[in-house]
Amino acid sequence: MKKLSARRRHPLAAVVVLLLALAATGGLYAAFAPADKAQADTSAQSLNIDEGKKLYDVGCASCHGTGGQGSSDGPSLVGVGAAAVDFQVGTGRMPAQQPGPQIEQKKVQYSQGDIKQLAAYVASLGAGPSIPTSQEYDPAGSDVAKGGELFRTNCTQCHNFIGEGGALTNGKFAPGLEGVTPKHMYEAMQTGPQSMPNFPDTTMPTKQKQQIIAYVQAVNGSQSESPGGLDLGGLGPVSEGLFAWIFGLGALIAVAVWIAAHTAKAKKS
Image (cartoon, rainbow, N blue to C red):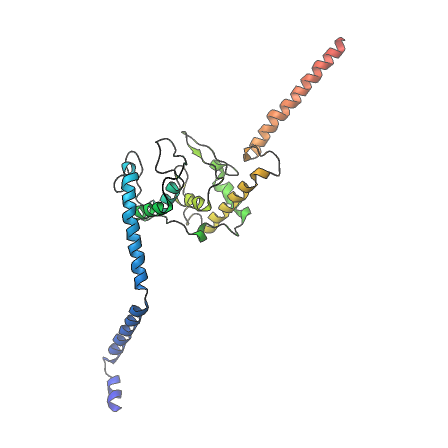
């Protein structure tokens, strides 16, 4: 016991105990850590990138360059992120059918698996917004009224009050939002496709994006049953006032002319 007590007071005793503790911790981690799962995830991601590059070389490189650096026919894809690919390819806008002031939505050309692989490859070219999870873009329980405020502040200038879209300059336009999935609306806000500005989380947090999605879904769901009758395109008070001025005042003028004409006839007779 005296020998053991003396060793415990040795200057290197603390170092020995620390080394033994580290060795034990490392052994336990090696025994219980999910190494196989981590290796499997890494292998799957590498496979997605490799397969995505093959798809990219066939369908995208002619415009965006062999390494995504861009060309005169297409912008650089370095740093756009997986979300931009998922939106553009997932809505059929890419691959583009023909050049023009704006690439329009069309039938989707790739399967969801191919889109995932393309997105993985483009994401490997540079950091950018990732594909959102369902928890991020699900608008369930969001404040629709607050979403309406955010939409009117940030979106109505182009998409109008209920998201029906509208014309922009130089042949461009803001597309209608009816039928757009929550995922693609979220990705559009994250990445800012074509003429649209982007709203990263630092500018517009996830909660606010969900509120905007909830509002768009609410107004699109009620367009066929407008409580005010004819919705006049949902353009707001300007279109309603113009309708009243042209048709309402025009009808009054027509009635006044008709009355004057019949009064003149009555006097002559």
